[in-house]
Image 1 (tube, helix red, strand yellow):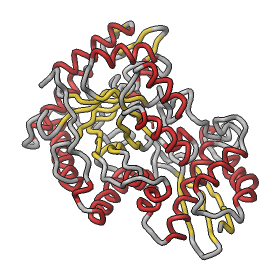
Image 2: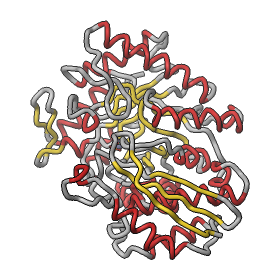
Image 3: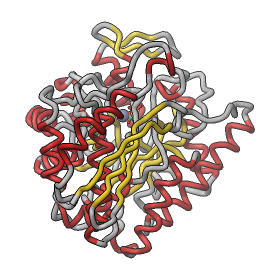
Image 4: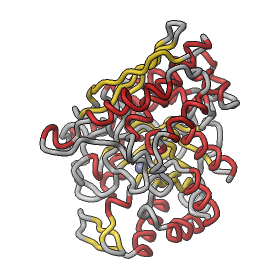
Length: 426
Ligand code: PGA
Ligand code: ZN
Protein backbone atom coordinates (compact mmCIF):
# COMPACT_ATOMS: atom_id res chain seq x y z
CA UNK A 1 0.00 0.00 0.00
CA UNK A 2 1.44 3.36 -1.05
CA UNK A 3 2.05 5.62 1.96
CA UNK A 4 3.93 8.49 0.36
CA UNK A 5 4.93 9.94 -3.01
CA UNK A 6 7.76 12.48 -3.13
CA UNK A 7 9.33 14.34 -6.03
CA UNK A 8 12.43 16.43 -6.60
CA UNK A 9 14.43 18.04 -9.38
CA UNK A 10 17.51 16.06 -10.41
CA UNK A 11 19.73 16.43 -13.52
CA UNK A 12 19.90 14.47 -16.77
CA UNK A 13 22.82 13.49 -19.01
CA UNK A 14 22.70 16.87 -20.78
CA UNK A 15 22.87 18.66 -17.44
CA UNK A 16 19.23 19.68 -17.71
CA UNK A 17 16.63 19.47 -14.94
CA UNK A 18 14.36 16.45 -14.81
CA UNK A 19 11.86 14.87 -12.40
CA UNK A 20 12.68 12.13 -9.89
CA UNK A 21 9.88 10.45 -7.96
CA UNK A 22 10.06 8.24 -4.87
CA UNK A 23 7.16 6.04 -3.86
CA UNK A 24 7.07 4.58 -0.34
CA UNK A 25 4.89 1.71 0.84
CA UNK A 26 3.62 0.91 4.36
CA UNK A 27 5.72 -2.25 4.43
CA UNK A 28 8.88 -0.10 4.11
CA UNK A 29 9.34 -0.48 0.35
CA UNK A 30 10.85 2.30 -1.77
CA UNK A 31 10.57 2.71 -5.53
CA UNK A 32 12.46 5.44 -7.35
CA UNK A 33 12.55 6.55 -10.99
CA UNK A 34 13.75 9.47 -13.12
CA UNK A 35 12.03 10.84 -16.24
CA UNK A 36 14.13 10.90 -19.43
CA UNK A 37 13.86 13.62 -22.11
CA UNK A 38 14.08 13.64 -25.91
CA UNK A 39 15.71 16.19 -28.23
CA UNK A 40 14.09 15.05 -31.48
CA UNK A 41 10.60 14.81 -30.00
CA UNK A 42 7.49 13.94 -31.99
CA UNK A 43 4.61 16.42 -32.03
CA UNK A 44 2.19 13.71 -30.91
CA UNK A 45 4.14 12.61 -27.83
CA UNK A 46 2.80 13.00 -24.31
CA UNK A 47 3.89 16.48 -23.23
CA UNK A 48 6.60 17.13 -20.66
CA UNK A 49 5.94 20.08 -18.39
CA UNK A 50 8.72 22.71 -18.25
CA UNK A 51 8.58 26.00 -16.38
CA UNK A 52 9.54 28.26 -19.29
CA UNK A 53 11.09 31.68 -18.63
CA UNK A 54 14.78 32.55 -18.64
CA UNK A 55 16.25 30.45 -15.86
CA UNK A 56 17.85 27.14 -16.94
CA UNK A 57 16.80 27.83 -20.51
CA UNK A 58 13.16 27.56 -19.50
CA UNK A 59 13.74 23.86 -18.80
CA UNK A 60 13.17 23.78 -15.05
CA UNK A 61 10.57 21.33 -13.77
CA UNK A 62 9.26 22.91 -10.57
CA UNK A 63 5.67 22.77 -11.83
CA UNK A 64 5.95 19.07 -12.65
CA UNK A 65 7.51 18.41 -9.23
CA UNK A 66 4.69 20.34 -7.55
CA UNK A 67 2.11 18.35 -9.52
CA UNK A 68 3.53 15.09 -8.15
CA UNK A 69 3.33 16.28 -4.59
CA UNK A 70 0.05 18.21 -4.76
CA UNK A 71 -2.04 16.25 -7.27
CA UNK A 72 -0.56 12.78 -7.69
CA UNK A 73 0.48 11.97 -4.10
CA UNK A 74 -3.01 12.43 -2.57
CA UNK A 75 -4.55 10.31 -5.35
CA UNK A 76 -2.14 7.41 -4.89
CA UNK A 77 -1.96 7.19 -1.09
CA UNK A 78 -3.55 3.92 0.04
CA UNK A 79 -3.40 2.31 -3.41
CA UNK A 80 -1.70 -1.10 -3.79
CA UNK A 81 1.73 -0.54 -5.39
CA UNK A 82 1.40 -3.91 -7.16
CA UNK A 83 -1.69 -2.66 -9.01
CA UNK A 84 0.20 -0.95 -11.86
CA UNK A 85 -2.83 -0.70 -14.13
CA UNK A 86 -4.92 0.80 -11.31
CA UNK A 87 -2.21 3.38 -10.54
CA UNK A 88 -1.79 4.29 -14.21
CA UNK A 89 -5.58 4.62 -14.59
CA UNK A 90 -5.53 7.09 -11.69
CA UNK A 91 -2.79 9.09 -13.43
CA UNK A 92 -4.92 9.10 -16.59
CA UNK A 93 -7.86 10.30 -14.51
CA UNK A 94 -5.91 13.28 -13.16
CA UNK A 95 -5.34 14.72 -16.65
CA UNK A 96 -8.15 15.23 -19.12
CA UNK A 97 -5.88 16.33 -22.00
CA UNK A 98 -5.10 12.75 -23.06
CA UNK A 99 -1.43 13.74 -23.42
CA UNK A 100 -0.53 14.71 -19.82
CA UNK A 101 -0.44 18.37 -20.80
CA UNK A 102 -1.64 19.43 -17.32
CA UNK A 103 0.15 16.94 -15.10
CA UNK A 104 3.28 16.74 -17.27
CA UNK A 105 4.38 13.45 -18.84
CA UNK A 106 7.67 13.87 -16.95
CA UNK A 107 5.67 13.83 -13.68
CA UNK A 108 3.47 10.91 -14.75
CA UNK A 109 6.19 8.70 -16.20
CA UNK A 110 8.53 9.08 -13.21
CA UNK A 111 5.61 8.25 -10.89
CA UNK A 112 4.44 5.29 -12.95
CA UNK A 113 7.95 3.80 -13.08
CA UNK A 114 8.58 4.47 -9.38
CA UNK A 115 5.37 2.59 -8.54
CA UNK A 116 6.58 -0.29 -10.73
CA UNK A 117 9.76 -0.44 -8.63
CA UNK A 118 7.78 -0.24 -5.38
CA UNK A 119 5.50 -3.05 -6.58
CA UNK A 120 8.50 -5.27 -7.33
CA UNK A 121 9.87 -4.58 -3.86
CA UNK A 122 6.54 -5.42 -2.21
CA UNK A 123 6.44 -8.69 -4.13
CA UNK A 124 10.09 -9.43 -3.37
CA UNK A 125 11.11 -10.16 -6.97
CA UNK A 126 13.46 -8.41 -9.44
CA UNK A 127 11.87 -5.65 -11.49
CA UNK A 128 11.98 -7.58 -14.79
CA UNK A 129 10.18 -10.49 -13.13
CA UNK A 130 7.55 -8.16 -11.66
CA UNK A 131 6.97 -6.68 -15.14
CA UNK A 132 6.63 -10.15 -16.70
CA UNK A 133 4.19 -11.25 -13.96
CA UNK A 134 2.15 -8.04 -13.99
CA UNK A 135 1.65 -8.07 -17.75
CA UNK A 136 1.70 -11.86 -18.13
CA UNK A 137 4.69 -12.15 -20.48
CA UNK A 138 7.58 -14.54 -20.97
CA UNK A 139 10.76 -12.60 -20.19
CA UNK A 140 13.57 -12.60 -22.75
CA UNK A 141 16.93 -10.89 -23.22
CA UNK A 142 16.78 -8.32 -26.04
CA UNK A 143 19.05 -7.73 -29.00
CA UNK A 144 21.00 -4.50 -28.48
CA UNK A 145 20.92 -1.72 -31.07
CA UNK A 146 23.99 0.41 -30.35
CA UNK A 147 24.92 3.79 -31.79
CA UNK A 148 28.46 4.19 -33.15
CA UNK A 149 28.10 7.68 -34.68
CA UNK A 150 25.57 10.20 -33.40
CA UNK A 151 24.18 12.83 -35.76
CA UNK A 152 21.11 14.95 -36.46
CA UNK A 153 19.65 16.80 -33.49
CA UNK A 154 22.12 15.03 -31.18
CA UNK A 155 25.12 16.58 -32.94
CA UNK A 156 23.90 20.05 -33.95
CA UNK A 157 22.93 18.71 -37.39
CA UNK A 158 26.57 17.91 -38.26
CA UNK A 159 25.27 15.09 -40.49
CA UNK A 160 21.64 14.52 -41.48
CA UNK A 161 21.11 10.97 -40.20
CA UNK A 162 20.61 10.88 -36.41
CA UNK A 163 21.84 7.38 -35.46
CA UNK A 164 24.36 5.15 -37.21
CA UNK A 165 23.98 1.91 -35.28
CA UNK A 166 25.03 -1.73 -35.24
CA UNK A 167 23.31 -4.88 -34.06
CA UNK A 168 24.92 -8.26 -33.47
CA UNK A 169 22.16 -10.78 -34.23
CA UNK A 170 24.84 -13.40 -34.87
CA UNK A 171 25.99 -13.33 -31.23
CA UNK A 172 25.23 -16.29 -29.01
CA UNK A 173 24.37 -14.17 -25.99
CA UNK A 174 23.86 -10.57 -24.91
CA UNK A 175 27.22 -10.73 -23.18
CA UNK A 176 28.94 -11.76 -26.42
CA UNK A 177 27.12 -9.00 -28.33
CA UNK A 178 28.61 -6.47 -25.88
CA UNK A 179 32.13 -7.76 -26.55
CA UNK A 180 31.66 -7.39 -30.32
CA UNK A 181 30.09 -3.95 -29.83
CA UNK A 182 32.97 -2.78 -27.62
CA UNK A 183 35.50 -3.82 -30.28
CA UNK A 184 33.61 -2.01 -33.03
CA UNK A 185 33.06 1.15 -30.97
CA UNK A 186 36.77 1.34 -30.14
CA UNK A 187 37.77 0.51 -33.72
CA UNK A 188 35.53 3.33 -34.94
CA UNK A 189 37.33 5.76 -32.62
CA UNK A 190 40.71 4.56 -33.91
CA UNK A 191 39.61 4.90 -37.56
CA UNK A 192 38.38 8.44 -36.85
CA UNK A 193 41.69 9.35 -35.19
CA UNK A 194 43.72 7.92 -38.11
CA UNK A 195 41.84 10.20 -40.52
CA UNK A 196 42.16 13.21 -38.24
CA UNK A 197 38.40 13.22 -37.74
CA UNK A 198 38.19 12.39 -34.03
CA UNK A 199 36.28 15.21 -32.30
CA UNK A 200 34.71 13.80 -29.14
CA UNK A 201 31.26 12.35 -28.80
CA UNK A 202 27.65 13.40 -29.46
CA UNK A 203 24.68 13.44 -27.02
CA UNK A 204 24.30 9.67 -26.71
CA UNK A 205 28.02 8.86 -26.59
CA UNK A 206 28.47 8.00 -30.28
CA UNK A 207 31.56 9.47 -31.99
CA UNK A 208 31.02 13.04 -33.19
CA UNK A 209 30.09 12.76 -36.91
CA UNK A 210 32.95 14.73 -38.40
CA UNK A 211 31.98 13.73 -41.96
CA UNK A 212 31.36 15.42 -45.30
CA UNK A 213 28.43 13.17 -46.24
CA UNK A 214 26.09 10.59 -44.75
CA UNK A 215 27.70 7.98 -47.04
CA UNK A 216 31.12 8.78 -45.59
CA UNK A 217 29.72 7.92 -42.14
CA UNK A 218 28.41 4.62 -43.50
CA UNK A 219 31.76 3.84 -45.15
CA UNK A 220 33.55 4.58 -41.88
CA UNK A 221 31.12 2.31 -40.02
CA UNK A 222 31.87 -0.52 -42.49
CA UNK A 223 35.57 0.06 -42.02
CA UNK A 224 35.22 -0.02 -38.21
CA UNK A 225 33.30 -3.31 -38.35
CA UNK A 226 36.08 -4.78 -40.50
CA UNK A 227 38.82 -3.33 -38.31
CA UNK A 228 37.19 -5.14 -35.38
CA UNK A 229 37.69 -8.40 -37.27
CA UNK A 230 34.06 -8.82 -38.37
CA UNK A 231 32.54 -9.20 -41.83
CA UNK A 232 29.72 -6.65 -42.21
CA UNK A 233 26.45 -8.40 -42.92
CA UNK A 234 27.43 -11.63 -41.19
CA UNK A 235 27.43 -11.48 -37.40
CA UNK A 236 27.10 -7.72 -37.39
CA UNK A 237 24.52 -5.62 -39.27
CA UNK A 238 23.77 -1.90 -39.55
CA UNK A 239 20.67 0.10 -38.61
CA UNK A 240 19.84 3.78 -39.07
CA UNK A 241 17.52 6.24 -37.37
CA UNK A 242 16.90 8.92 -39.99
CA UNK A 243 14.65 10.94 -37.61
CA UNK A 244 13.29 12.51 -40.79
CA UNK A 245 10.85 14.83 -39.04
CA UNK A 246 13.91 16.93 -38.22
CA UNK A 247 14.87 17.15 -41.93
CA UNK A 248 11.42 18.13 -43.18
CA UNK A 249 11.44 21.27 -45.31
CA UNK A 250 8.08 22.25 -46.80
CA UNK A 251 6.77 19.09 -48.43
CA UNK A 252 10.28 17.64 -48.89
CA UNK A 253 13.41 16.76 -46.96
CA UNK A 254 16.53 18.86 -46.70
CA UNK A 255 19.91 17.14 -46.63
CA UNK A 256 22.03 19.95 -45.25
CA UNK A 257 25.46 18.40 -45.93
CA UNK A 258 25.00 18.27 -49.68
CA UNK A 259 22.59 21.20 -49.86
CA UNK A 260 19.96 19.00 -51.50
CA UNK A 261 16.20 19.38 -51.19
CA UNK A 262 14.50 16.08 -52.07
CA UNK A 263 10.81 15.26 -52.41
CA UNK A 264 9.54 12.15 -50.60
CA UNK A 265 10.21 9.91 -53.63
CA UNK A 266 13.74 11.23 -54.04
CA UNK A 267 14.38 10.77 -50.35
CA UNK A 268 13.03 7.23 -50.49
CA UNK A 269 15.30 6.55 -53.48
CA UNK A 270 18.30 7.81 -51.53
CA UNK A 271 17.63 5.56 -48.54
CA UNK A 272 16.94 2.58 -50.84
CA UNK A 273 20.35 3.13 -52.41
CA UNK A 274 21.98 2.91 -48.95
CA UNK A 275 20.11 -0.33 -48.30
CA UNK A 276 21.56 -1.73 -51.54
CA UNK A 277 25.10 -0.63 -50.73
CA UNK A 278 25.31 -1.45 -47.03
CA UNK A 279 24.07 -4.34 -44.83
CA UNK A 280 21.32 -2.23 -43.30
CA UNK A 281 18.53 -4.25 -41.65
CA UNK A 282 16.51 -1.51 -39.95
CA UNK A 283 15.48 2.04 -40.87
CA UNK A 284 13.74 4.18 -38.24
CA UNK A 285 11.58 7.19 -39.17
CA UNK A 286 12.54 7.41 -42.88
CA UNK A 287 9.82 10.07 -43.28
CA UNK A 288 8.18 12.76 -41.19
CA UNK A 289 5.88 12.00 -38.29
CA UNK A 290 2.56 12.07 -40.20
CA UNK A 291 3.68 10.60 -43.54
CA UNK A 292 1.82 7.27 -43.24
CA UNK A 293 1.58 6.87 -47.03
CA UNK A 294 5.27 7.47 -47.67
CA UNK A 295 6.09 4.99 -44.93
CA UNK A 296 3.75 2.43 -46.52
CA UNK A 297 5.26 2.80 -49.99
CA UNK A 298 8.78 2.57 -48.56
CA UNK A 299 7.77 -0.45 -46.51
CA UNK A 300 6.54 -2.23 -49.65
CA UNK A 301 9.69 -1.65 -51.63
CA UNK A 302 12.12 -2.58 -48.84
CA UNK A 303 10.71 -6.07 -48.28
CA UNK A 304 12.43 -7.85 -45.42
CA UNK A 305 14.08 -5.06 -43.45
CA UNK A 306 12.68 -3.51 -40.28
CA UNK A 307 10.83 -0.27 -40.90
CA UNK A 308 10.62 1.30 -37.46
CA UNK A 309 8.16 3.97 -36.33
CA UNK A 310 9.28 6.35 -33.59
CA UNK A 311 7.98 9.91 -34.12
CA UNK A 312 5.31 8.35 -36.34
CA UNK A 313 3.90 6.15 -33.56
CA UNK A 314 5.00 7.96 -30.37
CA UNK A 315 4.28 4.80 -28.33
CA UNK A 316 0.56 5.41 -28.79
CA UNK A 317 -1.67 2.35 -29.28
CA UNK A 318 -4.10 4.24 -31.52
CA UNK A 319 -1.35 5.47 -33.82
CA UNK A 320 0.13 1.96 -33.94
CA UNK A 321 -3.27 0.66 -35.04
CA UNK A 322 -3.54 3.37 -37.73
CA UNK A 323 -0.03 2.63 -38.95
CA UNK A 324 -0.75 -1.10 -39.04
CA UNK A 325 -3.91 -0.51 -41.07
CA UNK A 326 -1.88 1.64 -43.50
CA UNK A 327 0.94 -0.93 -43.68
CA UNK A 328 3.31 1.85 -42.66
CA UNK A 329 5.86 -0.11 -40.59
CA UNK A 330 6.64 -3.51 -39.18
CA UNK A 331 8.42 -2.46 -35.97
CA UNK A 332 7.46 -0.08 -33.15
CA UNK A 333 9.90 1.90 -31.04
CA UNK A 334 8.61 1.93 -27.45
CA UNK A 335 9.57 4.94 -25.29
CA UNK A 336 7.70 4.95 -22.02
CA UNK A 337 7.88 8.75 -21.62
CA UNK A 338 6.26 9.26 -25.04
CA UNK A 339 3.27 7.39 -23.63
CA UNK A 340 3.37 8.93 -20.13
CA UNK A 341 2.69 5.75 -18.13
CA UNK A 342 3.93 2.15 -18.12
CA UNK A 343 0.43 0.83 -18.94
CA UNK A 344 0.06 3.10 -21.96
CA UNK A 345 3.47 1.99 -23.27
CA UNK A 346 2.47 -1.65 -22.78
CA UNK A 347 -0.78 -1.00 -24.68
CA UNK A 348 1.23 0.35 -27.64
CA UNK A 349 3.58 -2.64 -27.49
CA UNK A 350 0.58 -5.02 -27.39
CA UNK A 351 -0.98 -3.34 -30.39
CA UNK A 352 2.31 -3.74 -32.29
CA UNK A 353 2.58 -7.43 -31.39
CA UNK A 354 -1.07 -7.95 -32.42
CA UNK A 355 -0.14 -6.55 -35.83
CA UNK A 356 2.69 -9.10 -36.03
CA UNK A 357 5.35 -6.39 -35.61
CA UNK A 358 8.62 -6.39 -33.75
CA UNK A 359 9.25 -3.98 -30.88
CA UNK A 360 12.27 -2.05 -29.62
CA UNK A 361 12.27 -0.56 -26.12
CA UNK A 362 14.21 2.70 -26.35
CA UNK A 363 15.89 5.29 -24.15
CA UNK A 364 15.87 9.02 -24.94
CA UNK A 365 18.81 11.25 -25.81
CA UNK A 366 18.44 12.86 -22.37
CA UNK A 367 18.93 10.03 -19.85
CA UNK A 368 20.13 9.29 -16.32
CA UNK A 369 21.32 6.46 -14.12
CA UNK A 370 17.76 5.08 -14.21
CA UNK A 371 17.71 1.59 -15.74
CA UNK A 372 13.97 0.83 -15.52
CA UNK A 373 13.57 0.50 -19.30
CA UNK A 374 15.97 -2.45 -19.40
CA UNK A 375 13.62 -4.30 -17.05
CA UNK A 376 10.68 -3.33 -19.26
CA UNK A 377 12.46 -4.66 -22.35
CA UNK A 378 13.24 -7.96 -20.62
CA UNK A 379 9.98 -8.37 -18.70
CA UNK A 380 7.78 -7.53 -21.68
CA UNK A 381 9.80 -9.76 -24.02
CA UNK A 382 10.16 -6.76 -26.34
CA UNK A 383 12.93 -8.37 -28.42
CA UNK A 384 15.21 -5.35 -28.94
CA UNK A 385 16.75 -2.58 -26.84
CA UNK A 386 18.11 0.79 -27.99
CA UNK A 387 19.85 2.98 -25.39
CA UNK A 388 22.39 5.00 -27.38
CA UNK A 389 26.09 4.39 -27.73
CA UNK A 390 28.81 2.47 -25.91
CA UNK A 391 30.15 5.29 -23.74
CA UNK A 392 28.85 7.63 -21.01
CA UNK A 393 27.52 6.02 -17.87
CA UNK A 394 23.86 6.84 -18.46
CA UNK A 395 24.18 4.44 -21.45
CA UNK A 396 26.56 1.89 -19.93
CA UNK A 397 24.38 1.59 -16.79
CA UNK A 398 21.68 0.16 -19.04
CA UNK A 399 23.89 -2.26 -20.98
CA UNK A 400 25.39 -3.40 -17.67
CA UNK A 401 21.96 -3.98 -16.15
CA UNK A 402 21.10 -6.22 -19.09
CA UNK A 403 24.36 -8.16 -18.61
CA UNK A 404 23.29 -8.77 -14.99
CA UNK A 405 19.80 -9.87 -15.94
CA UNK A 406 21.15 -12.22 -18.59
CA UNK A 407 23.28 -13.89 -15.94
CA UNK A 408 20.15 -14.40 -13.83
CA UNK A 409 18.05 -15.68 -16.75
CA UNK A 410 20.70 -17.61 -18.69
CA UNK A 411 21.86 -16.98 -22.26
CA UNK A 412 19.07 -19.21 -23.61
CA UNK A 413 16.78 -16.25 -22.98
CA UNK A 414 18.67 -14.20 -25.61
CA UNK A 415 16.33 -13.62 -28.55
CA UNK A 416 18.81 -12.41 -31.18
CA UNK A 417 18.48 -15.65 -33.12
CA UNK A 418 15.57 -14.14 -35.05
CA UNK A 419 16.63 -13.48 -38.63
CA UNK A 420 17.45 -9.87 -39.38
CA UNK A 421 18.22 -9.74 -43.06
CA UNK A 422 18.68 -7.34 -45.89
CA UNK A 423 17.90 -9.41 -48.98
CA UNK A 424 18.84 -6.55 -51.30
CA UNK A 425 22.35 -6.26 -50.03
CA UNK A 426 22.95 -9.98 -49.42
P1 PGA B 1 15.36 11.61 -28.82
O1 PGA B 1 16.08 10.66 -29.86
O2 PGA B 1 15.35 10.96 -27.50
O3 PGA B 1 16.17 12.87 -28.89
O4 PGA B 1 13.95 11.82 -29.35
C1 PGA B 1 15.97 9.26 -29.83
C2 PGA B 1 15.35 8.73 -31.10
O5 PGA B 1 14.97 9.50 -32.00
O6 PGA B 1 15.19 7.51 -31.24
ZN1 ZN C 1 14.10 7.89 -33.35
